[in-house]
Length: 242
Image 1 (spheres, rainbow, N blue to C red):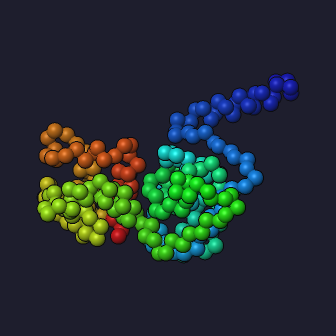
Image 2 (cartoon, helix red, strand yellow):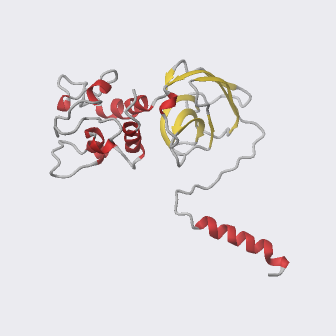
Image 3 (cartoon, rainbow, N blue to C red):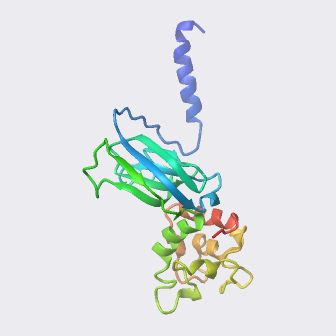
């Protein structure tokens, strides 16, 4: 091949190789900015060690109604965070969060909102956002409680006088009502059997539904996609840590 055609050939080869990947490919975004928000964080996080390699805890900037961050920086995996600094955060972002991302960099859960443009539209680019986690529980179960049980389940399971199926999923009650507790629907199963999501009634009821299953409600309607159901599965298969 003549030398003058070599650069074009290489470019086409690279494009061809990358287009063959059938994974979840997101366009890479590059921002050339002279200034941006700065986040500084000191303090402790509980149960951060519960997360496996499929997840990461980050400080991330998001545009409106997007589950994929514009920019993110992983925080240390130790419980005490010292002198964490994140500079050059895109000034067009709508929020900055301490959150959990999965393996395709999609937000799984928000642990804390550090900045919300709607609440503080006058934040100056030269200002620094300081955050102390104050021993915030960043564990897998805490995320499930906050984002699934409290938001979606507790209305029927605990806020009334008689919880559905005798199951309390309110904060402070859900763990002892789930882990190693016999299922009322299928007496050969536990509500949650540590290390075995497939034999855990909680995972079954959140991911399986049919006319003959006996549920009074289709609980799979709770999820759009499998992000949160995968979180439940990973938590159980990790031993259902509290």
